[in-house]
Length: 149
Ligand SMILES: [Zn+2]
Image (cartoon, rainbow, N blue to C red; front, top):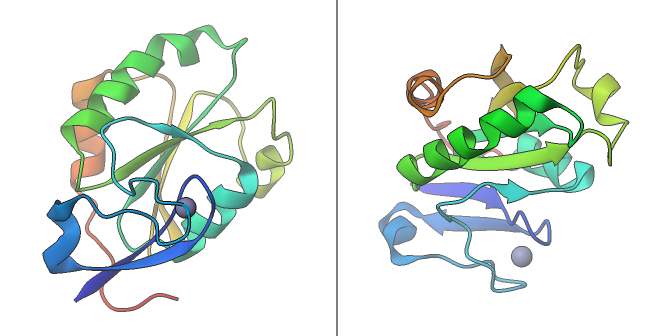
């Protein structure tokens, strides 16, 4: 079995055999590591593609610099990303830089976490929560089976 993940830097789709998951796989196009222990800041275009393609759970933190609770949660989100390296990918979308995200993802307030797996939204969580809660929330997610394009 293999997993599909979009490079969060350049948007290239990558197919990784499960046996190579722990070998530090890199994007075939730009060479960026596909799995890191930190959340990646992404654009709306890349998010749209990754949310459609990724079979590994993708956890997105919708935030903005003016949002106090968002800033408070940032280190918690980063800690969760570190703890879950290889099990889920963590990304951040700046809702101020990408105002179209509000409508596309029906965002009523931030911070907002949405988990995508295998081309669909599977879970969302509104409001700031600590790292342990983020991990608990994300741990129930399983990788989508089979080849989602
Ligand atoms: Zn890339």
